[in-house]
Image 1 (tube, rainbow, N blue to C red):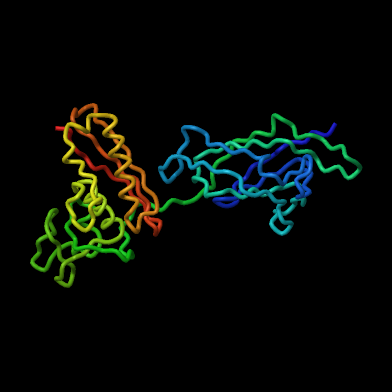
Image 2: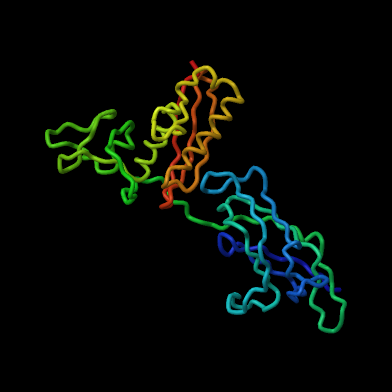
Length: 290
């Protein structure tokens, strides 16, 4: 007895997965009965609780197109007709993010008549990992076009951009001051260092402080005790993500709130950000509710 099974689901690219069956499924491309071309036959879902290497929650994806895998794309030993490539509407989250794929209504290709064998139901649901992708570690990237006069606030900023580690008189740069570069001119912040500074500026600036940008600023320090309210805190998170995403070199951002159990009255805003150059950073911005 022929058992028609879905044997493998393999991510090929960030927005492409390949299905391999025990036998060639019927694929006419005219959307008749049991045709494997309609995207309605393929349902994707995220596996709750899984997170990608980039630190962000798993992105939902949907199938936008189904086609037979071209013969030239098959690995050695592959049989044309047994594999179907599913294009997705967006990039999947990288492994170890997990997805579920459910396939329905497929039959084997029966050259001898209208028969064919229906897809084995237990095998029609597969859990698979997102594509393995090396996520670039947080780094100081001076290749960004945007830059600003350096005013370092932490050890990472003191070692970044164009700041000289030791000035000509032998005095190391100090946080909270204007630093100089190796030529004795004002140093500048760029890349992740500069982006982090601009994010902190948005979080701490009160809305309406800049006449030319009345909607700029989240104003977290001015909220004080209101940060202890769950509804206010959620509004702040939404506004912070919205404003940070307006920075021209931000590709993706997520802001989360961590309420300290050991230190009452302290809220840490954890910012996960990825720039358009691919550099990523994760840092905390602490604020008190006093």
